[in-house]
Amino acid sequence: MTETVSATEPMIRMGFFLGILVAMTVWEILAPRRDGDGFRAVRRLNNLGIVVLNTVLARLILPATTGGLALVAEAEGWGLFNLVNVPEWAAVLISVMLLDLAIYLQHVMFHAVPALWRLHRMHHADTGFDVTTGLRFHPLEILLSAAFKLALVLALGPPALAVLIFEVALNGTAMFNHSNARIPVPVDRVLRLFVVTPDMHRVHHSVHRDETDANFGFNLPWWDRLLGTYIPQPRDGHDDMTIGLPMFRDPGENRLDRLVTQPWRQG
View 1 (cartoon, one colour):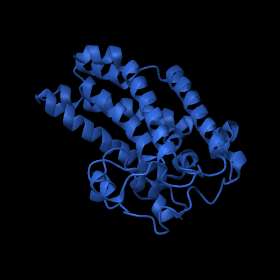
View 2 (tube, helix red, strand yellow):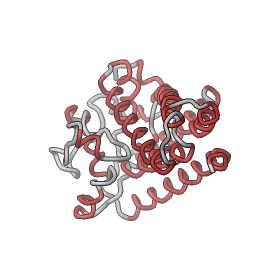
View 3 (cartoon, one colour):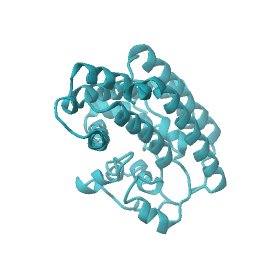
View 4 (tube, helix red, strand yellow):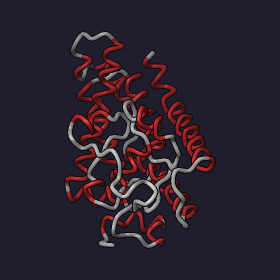
């Protein structure tokens, strides 16, 4: 099964990526949570442009996929789950949860370490909040994150199926919880017990720094609650809150060249 998963991993991930991107875009159009800003088309196009750039660079610089590396680790006996006798279903479940926790901690570090924050703030400098915001990350952040995930796979030795589930869930929920999709409040209240919802994650994109440094989860919502970084609602309310950072608010900052050079500018 793991060899089949590895062989089809790129197609599976791309299929889910495109399907969720289209679904969330349609949802945003039919039932938006907030009124869109006046530069939505420019923002969206450049946010999608940075995805293309990131994908090309990642393939050129780090051609190995996490799923492929999981197979190599299994064959060589590398990593925790290749050294202990654990049922495959348990290895898959625990691996997905540990990988998600690691990405949560990585996210916290990108806020806490000044040099990493200069890369990550490009994501937060988006003055709008829609599905493309979940794709807007600086190329250097993407490369560092990819290298971190490869190292995690070597250390944990997770089944390739677990890696595929994690990668698909991470990409999918990042688009879901960044979307401008309206979810009824009673539904959101229940849903955020199991997954990070748009209303939960929108707090993280508040202009107020204490709210920016909260709700770090992308997929599972439990780490924020357990580790004390959970804020239920923005102080200004979802309709009136200001999205983004105090700096880089000029519409021209949405140009692709400005996004790439942003870490080295003061705004």
